[in-house]
Amino acid sequence: MPNAKLENLLILALAATAKEREKSQALGTGYIPSAKSWELIVKYHGSLERLESDVISIEPLISGYCIATVREDFIDAFAQLDEVEYIEKPKRLYFE
Image 1 (tube, rainbow, N blue to C red):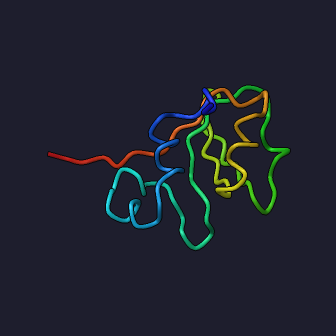
Image 2 (cartoon, rainbow, N blue to C red; image 1 turned 90 degrees about the vertical axis):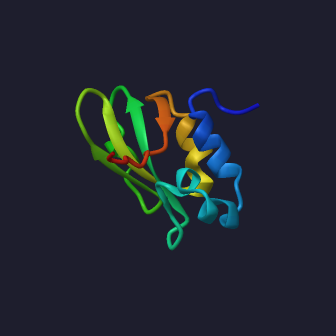
């Protein structure tokens, strides 16, 4: 069963192959192929700075949000943390 803290589009992107991500701008946004990591928008409470390591990088924002760069194979464990409330992928913005 998928983790309820993960956005549906993120779950889909994590399940996609590299070719599928390349073909879809929505699925590939936030993925860093060279590091096999994802830049993620995280809603949290408490402190996540203690998690800084080779596989997780935290950039605090405001009001309980941060940008976390997490290695792909650690996303599920990261989502299990009590401090983490919700995780989503960044989105591309288009101007008309």
